[in-house]
Amino acid sequence: MADGDVQFEVREGTGYLRLMRPTALNALSPQMIAVITEQLSAWRDDASVQALDISGEGRAYCAGADVRWMRSTMIENGVQSALEFLADEYAMDAVVAQFGKPVTTHLHGVAMGGGLGLGMHGATRVATADLAMAMPEVGIGLWPDVGMLFEFSRLPGEIGTWLALTGLTIDANTALAAGLVDQVDLMSAKPDLDLTWVDDYFVGDDAREIITRLEASSDERAVQAGELIRTRSPLSVAVSLAAIRRAATLHSVGDVLDQDLAIARALLPDPQCDFVEGVRAQLVDKDRQPHWSVARIEDIDPDKARAIVG
Image (cartoon, rainbow, N blue to C red; front, side, top):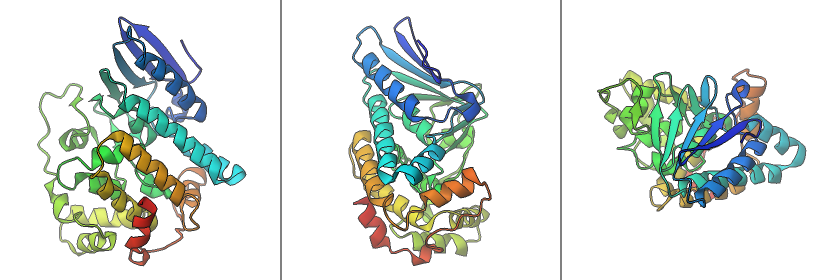
């Protein structure tokens, strides 16, 4: 069975979901989300389907949700239309997280944002050497959503905080060392990468203190992380920090998806929300010069970020 941008097939008890929108790096449209949710719900309840296999066509697994579409509908139809899109996306992610049968996801090329929400939860995650993985939402005025803060908050030390606040794109070796993928094709041993350096810098609940530590460091890795965070939406960075700390106290992916929807409902209508401007700068005009509503992290009140998270 195929539905244009998504292909479904059952073979020998396994349901195969293949994203088929390669010209858009398999970005998830509202229509794709709807058909995926419907089909996966049916497979979940079908005893003859005993496993799920997820992959993407072309040079990317999935670049995430179609945030350019989300920005357009938000401008044309208001915030509620964007919130409905996110609610539908999170419902799809919940179906995978609660599938109750073995799930295998094949991650290659670009694997970001909403694509990770579809393929990471409870799955065996197999990557290829060309993987470029990220939750880059702080760069477009959002936060790492789609339940990924459940995973991030449970990575060793402060690795998850580092990834959430920087929006850094990591390669297959780093993803394997961090525990975000289970195996990399053609790699026989786990890479010997030391990521513990992030622990001293990304501890705590105040983004202002984190950026101060990074910028005062003599470690080039820390300095580069600080420089990267400075390019991100200050409000998004503060919200992401509050959100990952709260996610660590939650019990399931479903709980974190509920948190994500609550954050969306609080953040998107906020006059200081940077989403429309962030997508403009990164994906529409591509000038990479966003004009954030608040220019500096030092000017963000952590209490405001915590209030948005709830």
